[in-house]
Length: 187
Image (cartoon, rainbow, N blue to C red; front, side, top):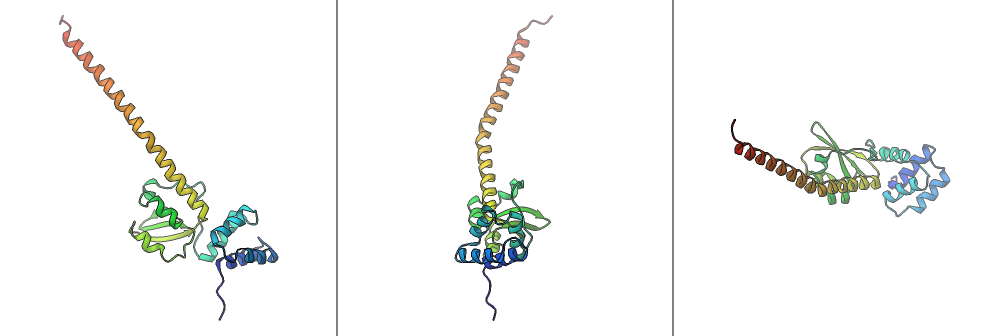
């Protein structure tokens, strides 16, 4: 019976096959990351310039047998993200991309995690399709979205107060003009 490869071994083999890293470098990477999680491995490959993000995403896509999704620069749907709490998305390294008919498409750093579907089901009742993304990028996108959302909301009351004050001043001016008009003698 053939021993099942770890994700690190499988990704390394794909990168060697595609000529991204040498077999010697691949052996060293497997030893170095034997007991590490795949997110650390993917980040190391990119951060140290051993592979670019596209190479890593291609390898992850092949490993998980799902398309890859690069969250960098993508504008997420505010209403869709608000269906999920920030801590839930961060904890599970997932972010909703879109709803295509009745299918919720999510980027996940580990689309093979069998626990995700029931967890997602407690927040949304769509069929789910996963695409693989890089954990750090997913985390950054979630934080950026919710931080922007919080800062936008923190300014809203000030803006609303100003608009309300402006409306009240205009209303008072109109009432004063009406009073002045009533007090003028009719000619």
